[in-house]
View (cartoon, each protein chain N blue to C red):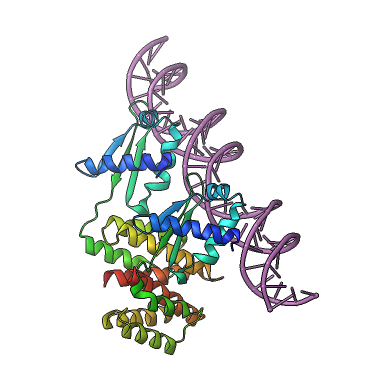
Length: 151
Length: 151
DNA sequence: CCTCCTTTGACTATTTCTGACCTTTGACTA
DNA sequence: TAGTCAAAGGTCAGAAATAGTCAAAGGAGG
């Protein structure tokens, strides 16, 4: 596996896991140094992978002594969180939404990586067969397959 | 005999067989290079031969570090009958068709009674939410949920 | 010669990576 | 206090690296 962005993502998640309270502080410039890339690459990783809907919060400050802080939102009771998330699935689900839902369910331990992969693949294939309302179909399929797993 | 498409198909199946978990990752461009063809030829092979109803799932990603992942389901021969029946599921499934399919899968021992019930319930619920193309949705949902069970 | 499957390539879509330029913060200094 | 400056981090557009789509051309068997 492999892009630089992936590696940086893994690194940050590792640090989060090791941290006491799901919260770490980074130096953008230093991190860029470690991975031998331009600093804005760090921003890229943060904005594409550590989004709110994936359960992360980013704060930062510029200037001398500046920092970037990454917080992982506490997931309380797993089942409750899953139920909440499940309810949250609306009538339409974009491709990006799907990705985020699957990632979150995976993080919650509701889905295995394999299951998430299978769901993603099936949804891609099934939505490829229709012209209209792909977003609605995605929502239906996601709900249906989650039900099968949760049953 | 062999068209190029056939060769590529054989190659991918070989790789799948050699893989640990019926899952491989390909680079479209590289594969096209190996077979000295245009990249879209790979898509042709995948869409014509590695379809869901033949027991394959395709996932892919574009951009830097992009890939095409091929997963095989229905690994053993025990669900050959299921595969055959699965194949028969067309683009549309009426409510009566659904009953019949579920019954048959139940008889074949592919689905437990509980699972069949759950599927029926979910399909009813989901089709209740849309106005048009209920038959198409039924087909998609049935396929999707069967995949989850078979996996 | 008709039809269906295969092959091709021009055009499109998406993701990652980079660099030039911009903004904010705080310390120092006049 | 106000001004200046260095040290962060932020933005954005574009290049590079992949993959997807679609229609037209090619070819083999009836």
